[in-house]
Image (cartoon, rainbow, N blue to C red; front, side, top):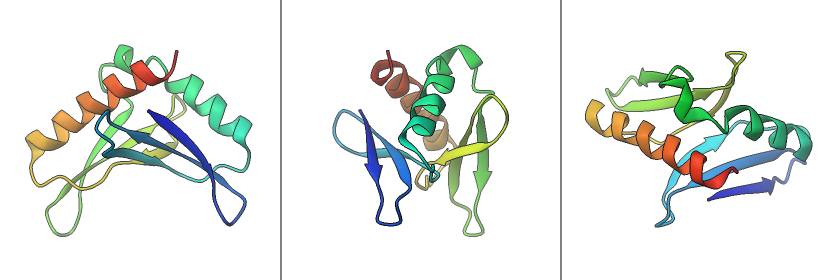
Length: 104
């Protein structure tokens, strides 16, 4: 499920949630709702990219996280933290599947 919110500062953000309500990914801020829609259209075939739009990262505490990029290489969202690399890879699969289901 993808939810688009207008934040207090007037910017928009999309949040990708799993079927059980867990937040999988939060986007960066966008100035218009149209910009969010265009970004979502850009990533709707995420499964076809073979993971090329995901940047795998490790923070200073050794936790893993995912940053999602658009087709131009700009970071458009990031995941929560994962305690293992395997968990992060599973998160990538969950994000890809959830986006595929949510954006038609």
